[in-house]
Image (cartoon, rainbow, N blue to C red):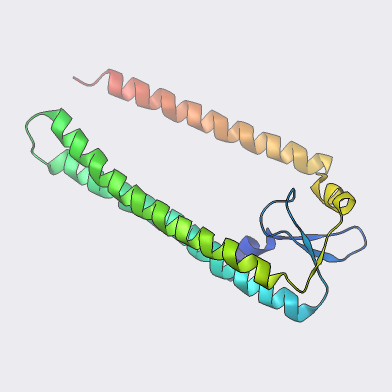
Amino acid sequence: MISLMNRLADVHFKKEASGRLVFVPFTQRGKCYFVDSITDEETIRAFVSMYRIPSALISILMTPIVMVPALILEDYGQLPPRVHRLRVAIGISGYFWLILLALELMLWFVYRAMVPGLTSSLHQVAPEIKAALRAIPAQQHGQRRVMLLCILAVLIVLGTALVVLTGYSK
């Protein structure tokens, strides 16, 4: 579990060709900063973890919280027309999605407001170094393509199964 939490923070750090550590707070197209001291790195990693870990947990935990009330209401709601059950189920799920969105936005605004103060003592990375950071090795590019194709295939199979299963219900 700890290694997973460290990976969430590692996404924001890259190594430059000369070996210097670069902090990428938002995207590689935006501002990036050199992290020269270990204390700065630890401080930034702790801060990024404080943002990324709750954000990931909210996303993971809210998905069943959104679906379960809708499924229970759909199955056991006992409202006579099916349309009314679906409307209420969608309304309940929509309410929980709004809570999810509000929590995620709150975390994002706090993170975005804290980054300038955290990086005020760091040196900004030059554009040519950022371009070198963006370069993706060919092997990693191929792995991304395979991963995207697998995700697309799974979504197509799930969509087809959903259409077939709902098409035959009476």
